[in-house]
Image 1 (spheres, helix red, strand yellow):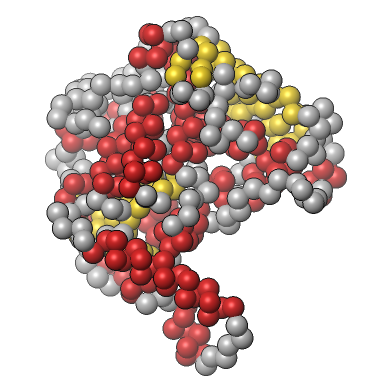
Image 2: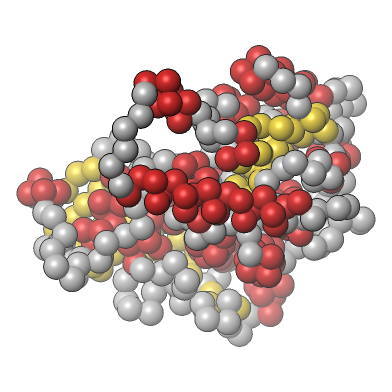
Length: 431
Protein backbone atom coordinates (compact mmCIF):
# COMPACT_ATOMS: atom_id res chain seq x y z
CA UNK A 1 0.00 0.00 0.00
CA UNK A 2 1.31 3.45 -0.94
CA UNK A 3 1.53 5.48 2.26
CA UNK A 4 3.89 8.19 1.00
CA UNK A 5 1.39 11.00 1.58
CA UNK A 6 1.03 10.35 5.34
CA UNK A 7 4.35 11.80 6.62
CA UNK A 8 3.87 14.91 4.47
CA UNK A 9 0.42 15.46 5.92
CA UNK A 10 1.72 15.05 9.46
CA UNK A 11 4.40 17.66 8.79
CA UNK A 12 1.72 19.97 7.41
CA UNK A 13 -0.44 19.56 10.51
CA UNK A 14 2.53 20.26 12.77
CA UNK A 15 3.55 23.37 10.81
CA UNK A 16 -0.08 24.53 10.82
CA UNK A 17 -0.16 24.29 14.60
CA UNK A 18 3.03 26.34 14.87
CA UNK A 19 1.69 28.94 12.48
CA UNK A 20 -1.52 29.27 14.46
CA UNK A 21 0.41 29.65 17.69
CA UNK A 22 2.62 32.37 16.14
CA UNK A 23 -0.39 34.24 14.80
CA UNK A 24 -2.06 34.13 18.20
CA UNK A 25 1.00 35.63 19.87
CA UNK A 26 0.47 39.15 18.54
CA UNK A 27 -2.51 41.57 18.45
CA UNK A 28 -4.84 41.08 15.50
CA UNK A 29 -7.98 42.64 14.09
CA UNK A 30 -10.43 40.60 12.05
CA UNK A 31 -13.85 41.05 10.55
CA UNK A 32 -16.76 38.95 11.78
CA UNK A 33 -16.69 36.96 8.54
CA UNK A 34 -13.04 36.06 9.13
CA UNK A 35 -13.85 35.08 12.71
CA UNK A 36 -16.63 32.80 11.51
CA UNK A 37 -14.29 31.19 8.97
CA UNK A 38 -11.76 30.52 11.72
CA UNK A 39 -14.36 28.61 13.72
CA UNK A 40 -14.13 25.78 11.19
CA UNK A 41 -10.63 24.70 10.19
CA UNK A 42 -9.79 24.40 6.53
CA UNK A 43 -10.06 20.84 5.19
CA UNK A 44 -6.28 20.53 5.10
CA UNK A 45 -6.14 21.30 8.86
CA UNK A 46 -8.69 18.68 9.88
CA UNK A 47 -7.72 15.25 11.15
CA UNK A 48 -9.26 12.60 8.89
CA UNK A 49 -10.46 9.72 11.06
CA UNK A 50 -11.68 6.18 10.47
CA UNK A 51 -13.95 4.59 13.09
CA UNK A 52 -13.36 0.86 13.66
CA UNK A 53 -16.13 -0.57 15.82
CA UNK A 54 -19.57 0.98 15.42
CA UNK A 55 -21.51 -0.58 18.30
CA UNK A 56 -23.33 1.50 20.88
CA UNK A 57 -20.14 2.99 22.33
CA UNK A 58 -18.70 3.67 18.90
CA UNK A 59 -21.84 5.24 17.41
CA UNK A 60 -23.72 6.82 20.29
CA UNK A 61 -20.76 8.13 22.27
CA UNK A 62 -17.71 8.64 20.09
CA UNK A 63 -19.35 9.26 16.71
CA UNK A 64 -22.41 11.27 17.70
CA UNK A 65 -20.99 13.17 20.69
CA UNK A 66 -17.28 13.55 19.99
CA UNK A 67 -16.32 13.05 16.36
CA UNK A 68 -19.12 14.50 14.27
CA UNK A 69 -19.66 17.71 16.32
CA UNK A 70 -15.93 18.49 16.28
CA UNK A 71 -14.96 20.89 13.43
CA UNK A 72 -11.36 19.69 13.65
CA UNK A 73 -12.36 16.15 12.60
CA UNK A 74 -13.53 14.71 9.30
CA UNK A 75 -14.89 11.17 9.59
CA UNK A 76 -14.01 9.45 6.32
CA UNK A 77 -14.55 5.74 7.00
CA UNK A 78 -16.46 3.37 9.28
CA UNK A 79 -15.95 -0.35 9.86
CA UNK A 80 -17.83 -3.08 11.73
CA UNK A 81 -18.47 -6.80 11.32
CA UNK A 82 -22.17 -6.10 12.00
CA UNK A 83 -23.77 -4.64 8.86
CA UNK A 84 -26.50 -2.87 10.81
CA UNK A 85 -23.96 -1.07 12.96
CA UNK A 86 -21.75 0.08 10.12
CA UNK A 87 -24.67 1.15 7.92
CA UNK A 88 -26.18 3.22 10.72
CA UNK A 89 -22.81 4.82 11.41
CA UNK A 90 -22.35 5.66 7.72
CA UNK A 91 -25.81 7.22 7.61
CA UNK A 92 -25.02 9.34 10.67
CA UNK A 93 -21.87 10.66 9.02
CA UNK A 94 -23.63 11.39 5.74
CA UNK A 95 -26.42 13.27 7.49
CA UNK A 96 -23.97 15.37 9.51
CA UNK A 97 -21.16 15.93 7.01
CA UNK A 98 -23.18 15.78 3.80
CA UNK A 99 -20.84 13.25 2.21
CA UNK A 100 -20.56 9.53 1.77
CA UNK A 101 -17.80 7.67 3.58
CA UNK A 102 -15.90 4.44 3.11
CA UNK A 103 -17.87 1.55 4.62
CA UNK A 104 -16.00 -1.65 5.51
CA UNK A 105 -16.52 -4.99 7.21
CA UNK A 106 -12.76 -5.70 7.39
CA UNK A 107 -10.49 -3.22 9.20
CA UNK A 108 -7.63 -4.13 6.86
CA UNK A 109 -9.55 -2.72 3.93
CA UNK A 110 -10.25 0.48 5.89
CA UNK A 111 -6.52 0.89 6.52
CA UNK A 112 -5.96 0.85 2.76
CA UNK A 113 -7.96 4.08 2.43
CA UNK A 114 -5.14 6.55 1.85
CA UNK A 115 -6.68 9.77 3.18
CA UNK A 116 -6.90 8.62 6.81
CA UNK A 117 -4.65 10.30 9.39
CA UNK A 118 -5.90 8.38 12.40
CA UNK A 119 -8.24 5.65 13.56
CA UNK A 120 -10.43 5.15 16.58
CA UNK A 121 -10.64 1.55 17.83
CA UNK A 122 -13.90 0.81 19.66
CA UNK A 123 -14.11 -2.96 19.22
CA UNK A 124 -14.34 -5.72 21.84
CA UNK A 125 -11.12 -5.95 23.83
CA UNK A 126 -9.73 -9.08 22.16
CA UNK A 127 -9.35 -7.10 18.91
CA UNK A 128 -7.62 -4.00 20.32
CA UNK A 129 -3.98 -5.05 19.91
CA UNK A 130 -4.26 -6.50 16.41
CA UNK A 131 -6.12 -3.50 14.99
CA UNK A 132 -4.14 -0.79 16.79
CA UNK A 133 -0.79 -2.29 15.79
CA UNK A 134 -1.92 -2.71 12.17
CA UNK A 135 -3.01 0.93 12.15
CA UNK A 136 0.33 2.12 13.54
CA UNK A 137 2.18 0.04 10.93
CA UNK A 138 0.38 2.02 8.22
CA UNK A 139 1.41 5.35 9.77
CA UNK A 140 -1.84 6.21 11.53
CA UNK A 141 -2.29 7.70 14.97
CA UNK A 142 -4.64 5.83 17.29
CA UNK A 143 -7.33 6.38 19.89
CA UNK A 144 -8.07 2.98 21.46
CA UNK A 145 -10.78 2.35 23.99
CA UNK A 146 -9.99 0.93 27.39
CA UNK A 147 -9.19 -1.64 28.60
CA UNK A 148 -6.22 -1.33 26.29
CA UNK A 149 -5.44 -5.04 25.94
CA UNK A 150 -6.70 -8.55 26.57
CA UNK A 151 -3.34 -9.66 28.01
CA UNK A 152 -0.19 -8.13 29.43
CA UNK A 153 1.90 -9.28 26.47
CA UNK A 154 -0.50 -7.62 24.02
CA UNK A 155 -0.09 -4.35 25.89
CA UNK A 156 3.68 -4.60 25.74
CA UNK A 157 3.47 -5.18 21.98
CA UNK A 158 1.26 -2.09 21.56
CA UNK A 159 3.73 0.08 23.48
CA UNK A 160 6.63 -1.25 21.39
CA UNK A 161 4.75 -0.52 18.15
CA UNK A 162 3.87 3.02 19.19
CA UNK A 163 7.49 3.78 20.00
CA UNK A 164 8.75 2.10 16.82
CA UNK A 165 6.44 4.05 14.52
CA UNK A 166 6.28 7.32 16.47
CA UNK A 167 2.51 7.07 16.79
CA UNK A 168 0.39 9.43 18.85
CA UNK A 169 -1.73 7.08 20.93
CA UNK A 170 -4.57 7.97 23.30
CA UNK A 171 -6.05 5.32 25.58
CA UNK A 172 -9.74 5.95 26.24
CA UNK A 173 -9.35 6.34 30.01
CA UNK A 174 -11.13 9.68 29.90
CA UNK A 175 -11.16 10.20 33.67
CA UNK A 176 -7.65 11.66 33.24
CA UNK A 177 -9.36 14.53 31.42
CA UNK A 178 -11.82 15.12 34.28
CA UNK A 179 -10.84 17.98 36.61
CA UNK A 180 -12.18 16.14 39.69
CA UNK A 181 -9.83 13.20 39.25
CA UNK A 182 -6.88 15.46 38.44
CA UNK A 183 -7.58 17.57 41.54
CA UNK A 184 -7.79 14.48 43.76
CA UNK A 185 -4.50 13.10 42.42
CA UNK A 186 -2.70 16.44 42.77
CA UNK A 187 -3.87 16.80 46.37
CA UNK A 188 -2.67 13.28 47.16
CA UNK A 189 0.63 13.66 45.32
CA UNK A 190 1.34 16.92 47.20
CA UNK A 191 0.66 15.48 50.66
CA UNK A 192 -2.52 17.44 51.34
CA UNK A 193 -3.99 14.45 53.22
CA UNK A 194 -0.65 13.60 54.83
CA UNK A 195 1.26 10.42 54.09
CA UNK A 196 -0.73 8.18 51.75
CA UNK A 197 -1.25 4.69 53.14
CA UNK A 198 -4.15 3.12 51.26
CA UNK A 199 -6.32 3.50 48.16
CA UNK A 200 -9.58 1.68 47.55
CA UNK A 201 -11.23 1.38 44.15
CA UNK A 202 -14.87 0.26 43.99
CA UNK A 203 -15.89 -1.05 40.56
CA UNK A 204 -19.01 -3.20 40.92
CA UNK A 205 -19.78 -6.89 40.41
CA UNK A 206 -21.69 -8.99 37.87
CA UNK A 207 -24.24 -11.82 38.06
CA UNK A 208 -23.69 -15.29 36.52
CA UNK A 209 -25.68 -14.49 33.38
CA UNK A 210 -28.16 -16.64 31.50
CA UNK A 211 -27.34 -19.54 29.24
CA UNK A 212 -29.01 -19.47 25.85
CA UNK A 213 -29.15 -22.25 23.25
CA UNK A 214 -26.67 -22.01 20.41
CA UNK A 215 -28.22 -20.55 17.30
CA UNK A 216 -27.38 -19.41 13.80
CA UNK A 217 -25.83 -15.94 13.90
CA UNK A 218 -28.05 -13.18 12.47
CA UNK A 219 -27.37 -12.56 8.77
CA UNK A 220 -26.02 -9.05 9.39
CA UNK A 221 -23.25 -10.34 11.71
CA UNK A 222 -20.03 -12.00 10.53
CA UNK A 223 -19.68 -14.15 13.63
CA UNK A 224 -16.41 -15.81 12.63
CA UNK A 225 -14.79 -12.41 12.06
CA UNK A 226 -16.25 -11.12 15.34
CA UNK A 227 -14.49 -14.00 17.13
CA UNK A 228 -11.29 -13.36 15.19
CA UNK A 229 -8.31 -14.42 17.33
CA UNK A 230 -10.53 -15.88 20.08
CA UNK A 231 -11.29 -19.62 20.22
CA UNK A 232 -14.27 -20.70 18.15
CA UNK A 233 -17.55 -20.71 20.10
CA UNK A 234 -21.14 -21.20 19.03
CA UNK A 235 -23.13 -18.02 18.78
CA UNK A 236 -25.79 -16.96 21.24
CA UNK A 237 -26.87 -13.33 21.81
CA UNK A 238 -25.62 -13.05 25.40
CA UNK A 239 -22.06 -13.79 24.26
CA UNK A 240 -21.91 -10.90 21.81
CA UNK A 241 -21.95 -7.09 21.70
CA UNK A 242 -22.15 -5.51 25.19
CA UNK A 243 -22.13 -8.88 26.99
CA UNK A 244 -18.69 -9.83 25.67
CA UNK A 245 -17.21 -8.12 28.74
CA UNK A 246 -18.09 -11.07 30.97
CA UNK A 247 -16.14 -13.74 29.02
CA UNK A 248 -12.39 -14.22 29.49
CA UNK A 249 -11.90 -15.03 25.80
CA UNK A 250 -12.87 -11.46 24.93
CA UNK A 251 -12.35 -9.33 28.05
CA UNK A 252 -11.61 -9.42 31.77
CA UNK A 253 -14.92 -8.69 33.49
CA UNK A 254 -15.40 -5.76 35.83
CA UNK A 255 -11.71 -5.93 36.73
CA UNK A 256 -10.78 -4.61 33.29
CA UNK A 257 -14.05 -2.83 32.44
CA UNK A 258 -14.26 -0.41 35.38
CA UNK A 259 -10.94 -1.39 36.91
CA UNK A 260 -9.11 0.08 33.93
CA UNK A 261 -10.68 3.43 34.86
CA UNK A 262 -10.30 3.55 38.62
CA UNK A 263 -7.02 1.64 38.96
CA UNK A 264 -5.65 4.05 36.37
CA UNK A 265 -6.47 6.93 38.72
CA UNK A 266 -4.79 5.06 41.59
CA UNK A 267 -1.65 4.68 39.47
CA UNK A 268 -1.77 8.40 38.62
CA UNK A 269 -1.98 9.40 42.28
CA UNK A 270 0.88 7.03 43.11
CA UNK A 271 3.13 8.42 40.39
CA UNK A 272 3.28 4.88 39.00
CA UNK A 273 2.51 5.56 35.33
CA UNK A 274 5.65 3.68 34.32
CA UNK A 275 5.55 1.12 37.11
CA UNK A 276 3.11 -0.97 39.12
CA UNK A 277 2.61 -3.06 42.26
CA UNK A 278 5.06 -5.65 43.55
CA UNK A 279 2.60 -8.00 45.29
CA UNK A 280 -0.93 -9.05 44.33
CA UNK A 281 -3.39 -11.14 46.36
CA UNK A 282 -6.79 -11.66 44.76
CA UNK A 283 -9.90 -13.45 45.98
CA UNK A 284 -12.90 -13.84 43.69
CA UNK A 285 -16.23 -15.63 43.49
CA UNK A 286 -16.61 -17.67 40.29
CA UNK A 287 -20.10 -18.87 39.48
CA UNK A 288 -20.81 -22.58 38.98
CA UNK A 289 -23.89 -21.78 36.88
CA UNK A 290 -24.36 -19.38 33.99
CA UNK A 291 -22.04 -18.61 31.08
CA UNK A 292 -19.90 -15.89 32.70
CA UNK A 293 -16.42 -17.16 33.54
CA UNK A 294 -15.09 -14.00 35.19
CA UNK A 295 -15.30 -13.42 38.96
CA UNK A 296 -18.64 -11.87 39.85
CA UNK A 297 -17.60 -10.49 43.25
CA UNK A 298 -14.02 -10.02 44.37
CA UNK A 299 -11.38 -8.21 46.37
CA UNK A 300 -7.79 -7.81 45.22
CA UNK A 301 -5.05 -6.30 47.38
CA UNK A 302 -2.00 -4.78 45.70
CA UNK A 303 1.12 -3.62 47.51
CA UNK A 304 3.53 -1.12 46.02
CA UNK A 305 7.24 -0.80 46.75
CA UNK A 306 6.62 2.38 48.77
CA UNK A 307 4.31 0.49 51.14
CA UNK A 308 1.00 1.89 49.85
CA UNK A 309 -1.82 -0.64 49.60
CA UNK A 310 -4.40 -0.57 46.81
CA UNK A 311 -7.59 -2.59 47.37
CA UNK A 312 -9.78 -3.10 44.31
CA UNK A 313 -13.20 -4.51 45.15
CA UNK A 314 -16.60 -5.13 43.67
CA UNK A 315 -18.51 -3.74 46.66
CA UNK A 316 -19.05 -0.13 47.73
CA UNK A 317 -19.95 3.10 45.99
CA UNK A 318 -18.34 3.34 42.57
CA UNK A 319 -15.27 5.54 42.85
CA UNK A 320 -11.76 5.93 44.26
CA UNK A 321 -10.91 6.71 47.90
CA UNK A 322 -7.50 7.84 49.14
CA UNK A 323 -6.53 7.44 52.83
CA UNK A 324 -3.75 9.56 54.32
CA UNK A 325 -2.39 10.21 57.79
CA UNK A 326 -4.31 13.52 57.90
CA UNK A 327 -7.55 12.76 56.07
CA UNK A 328 -9.20 11.15 53.07
CA UNK A 329 -10.51 12.06 49.61
CA UNK A 330 -13.23 10.27 47.64
CA UNK A 331 -13.81 10.94 43.93
CA UNK A 332 -16.01 9.59 41.18
CA UNK A 333 -17.54 11.00 38.00
CA UNK A 334 -20.16 12.95 39.89
CA UNK A 335 -18.40 14.37 42.92
CA UNK A 336 -15.27 14.89 44.97
CA UNK A 337 -15.42 14.78 48.79
CA UNK A 338 -12.89 15.05 51.60
CA UNK A 339 -12.76 14.34 55.33
CA UNK A 340 -12.33 18.11 55.76
CA UNK A 341 -13.95 20.20 53.00
CA UNK A 342 -11.11 22.68 53.43
CA UNK A 343 -8.75 20.16 51.81
CA UNK A 344 -10.54 20.70 48.50
CA UNK A 345 -9.84 24.43 48.69
CA UNK A 346 -6.07 23.97 48.94
CA UNK A 347 -4.11 25.28 45.98
CA UNK A 348 -0.76 23.98 44.71
CA UNK A 349 2.19 25.88 46.12
CA UNK A 350 5.69 26.55 44.81
CA UNK A 351 7.41 23.27 44.06
CA UNK A 352 4.22 21.22 44.19
CA UNK A 353 3.50 18.57 41.58
CA UNK A 354 1.26 19.78 38.74
CA UNK A 355 -0.21 16.98 36.69
CA UNK A 356 -0.81 16.89 32.94
CA UNK A 357 -3.94 18.96 32.32
CA UNK A 358 -6.58 18.12 29.74
CA UNK A 359 -10.17 19.34 29.69
CA UNK A 360 -11.32 16.98 26.95
CA UNK A 361 -9.86 13.60 26.02
CA UNK A 362 -10.56 13.82 22.29
CA UNK A 363 -9.28 17.40 22.05
CA UNK A 364 -6.08 16.33 23.78
CA UNK A 365 -5.67 13.59 21.19
CA UNK A 366 -6.12 16.08 18.34
CA UNK A 367 -3.71 18.56 19.91
CA UNK A 368 -1.08 15.85 20.25
CA UNK A 369 -1.58 14.70 16.67
CA UNK A 370 -0.56 18.21 15.64
CA UNK A 371 2.22 18.72 18.17
CA UNK A 372 3.46 15.07 18.13
CA UNK A 373 3.60 15.13 21.93
CA UNK A 374 2.35 12.24 24.04
CA UNK A 375 -1.29 12.18 25.10
CA UNK A 376 -2.51 12.46 28.66
CA UNK A 377 -3.21 8.70 28.63
CA UNK A 378 -0.44 7.54 26.34
CA UNK A 379 -0.28 3.89 25.32
CA UNK A 380 2.20 2.99 28.06
CA UNK A 381 0.00 4.56 30.73
CA UNK A 382 -2.99 2.61 29.44
CA UNK A 383 -0.89 -0.56 29.35
CA UNK A 384 0.49 -0.15 32.86
CA UNK A 385 -2.96 0.57 34.30
CA UNK A 386 -4.67 -2.43 32.73
CA UNK A 387 -1.69 -4.59 33.75
CA UNK A 388 -2.79 -3.97 37.34
CA UNK A 389 -6.20 -5.41 36.40
CA UNK A 390 -4.79 -8.38 34.49
CA UNK A 391 -2.60 -9.30 37.47
CA UNK A 392 -5.65 -9.26 39.73
CA UNK A 393 -7.51 -11.60 37.39
CA UNK A 394 -4.54 -13.98 37.19
CA UNK A 395 -4.24 -14.11 40.98
CA UNK A 396 -7.97 -14.84 41.32
CA UNK A 397 -7.92 -17.53 38.63
CA UNK A 398 -5.02 -19.34 40.27
CA UNK A 399 -6.21 -18.73 43.83
CA UNK A 400 -2.81 -17.61 45.08
CA UNK A 401 -0.79 -14.42 45.60
CA UNK A 402 1.73 -13.23 43.04
CA UNK A 403 4.96 -11.25 43.04
CA UNK A 404 5.43 -8.81 40.16
CA UNK A 405 8.58 -7.16 38.87
CA UNK A 406 7.35 -3.86 37.35
CA UNK A 407 10.73 -3.12 35.77
CA UNK A 408 11.02 -6.39 33.84
CA UNK A 409 7.22 -6.69 33.63
CA UNK A 410 7.27 -10.31 34.71
CA UNK A 411 5.64 -12.44 37.41
CA UNK A 412 8.37 -13.67 39.71
CA UNK A 413 8.82 -17.36 40.56
CA UNK A 414 5.53 -18.64 39.13
CA UNK A 415 5.80 -20.04 35.60
CA UNK A 416 2.11 -20.97 35.41
CA UNK A 417 1.06 -17.44 36.29
CA UNK A 418 3.59 -15.95 33.85
CA UNK A 419 2.10 -18.07 31.05
CA UNK A 420 -1.27 -16.40 31.71
CA UNK A 421 0.28 -13.06 30.72
CA UNK A 422 -0.26 -14.11 27.10
CA UNK A 423 -3.02 -15.90 25.22
CA UNK A 424 -2.78 -17.98 22.03
CA UNK A 425 -4.56 -16.55 18.99
CA UNK A 426 -6.69 -18.57 16.62
CA UNK A 427 -5.15 -18.89 13.16
CA UNK A 428 -4.57 -16.99 10.98
CA UNK A 429 -4.37 -14.13 13.50
CA UNK A 430 -1.14 -13.35 15.30
CA UNK A 431 0.76 -10.36 16.66
